[in-house]
Image (cartoon, rainbow, N blue to C red; front, side, top):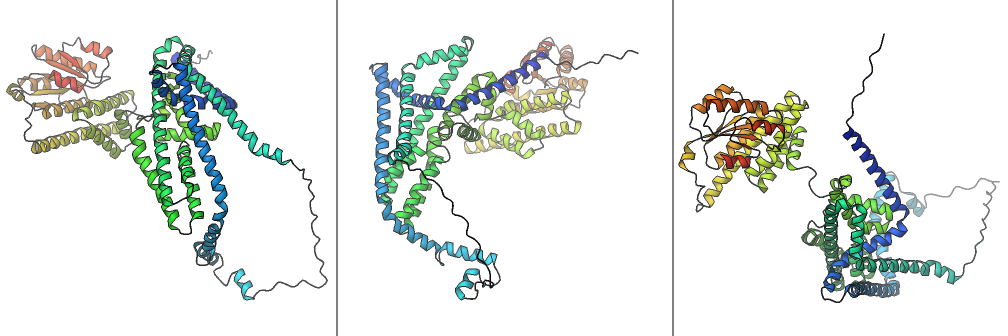
Length: 615
């Protein structure tokens, strides 16, 4: 007996290609991360040079407009920048030497404050007694017993032999030359830092001189077919980075100068040093401002006898940080980076793990470049989704998702927010109507049971009616506060003749018709919608009873074209001169719209705004 041949489900080629594309992208990302980690000694100076070139490029451009030449402009900008950095370094070194010279004078204050804290009346003494009482609630502690003489050492039994002492370990210490130790501890790290600075300097100069040539080579490397996308990516990345770095320089410089002035007025020694360090450390996200605050606060504890000076220093840092984070940075930065807060945190952790402290400094600029690549390179689009500060879902999809989750409160808050930012037409056309189309698509795929479907439709109808009431109240309030505004002029003929909106098939079509009815009424037009429970013959009888300028058939895709076409043909056969408009909501063309064009309708509209203009 022959067994039937086993059949396997057919997998479309597009899914196979999509799966292989995802695997290739994943392998490519892993390979790039590996290269970044292994080649960090080479790539870190290059990344620093790229960062400085983005910062200096606008200034080089301004110098070039003075007609002094490309090379002279680059050299001038680089020399001024590195001279300023050298001057800051010299001031910091001088201040550090002065601080080291005066550290001995702070020892007495530190000792006094520590003794005050550890005294029985001090915070640490009280905390210690509280802990002792918790650990030994009954009887005095061991220290008190010793002081009171209530405990004695247990006498050794007669004839006891003392335990042998452990042997003393002997280690051979190789004496190192002081000069060699000096070279290993100071000179070698200094020379290494200077070498890295020299490499960065050379990179910056050549990047600025040949920036157009580097850009063109990257475009050719990516491919001539992607010139438009690559050009847009370069322009957006350079504008974002240049503005971000410039604004960051302004904010950090202002922060450092204000801090130095405040610490000087308080009387803290070496106020210029702490202002410079705070301005530089703020380039390190998240941890930099904390480090910048710890050192001056600790010094204020050591330099002054009173506790008021440390409190004033803490207050100065708190006020400056709050002002910078809540006023200056949002005002100057705005949406410069285009990266979400979670994206910045993820980037900070990733680049710190990859490149250490330098990676933390470079985290934001490098992440901006990656997010821009994700926006213009389809295979890297997931970076744009993960890192961008744009909404992950459009408002319509967000609303439908919350309704699916049964979170009616958040869905209502979303609709209220959209209504506060726009008009009733905007919310209906851009939020509720697309969400209604998503609902119908899921319903016809079989993804919603009857109870869930009815809950979603009832929620949508409730939101539509609630928004219409809010809009009517807002219009009435505006008319009372602004009596000089004349109402919209509507002809008497249109006031008398009513526009009827007919649902094509089911309740979703009726909800869309209800939206259009509310909009027409808000504009002063007479309008009504017919219940979906009515038969087609009953709808035609209702049309026959009135002298209607327009009849609109509301149809929510994807599977209402047949019913819409049937209703339109019956109406045309009975009323040959009637103006009929079909609302095929949010349609983008296709077979359904082509089929409806043969149904003798006068016009097909896809949005409520088009429908208002047509009726």
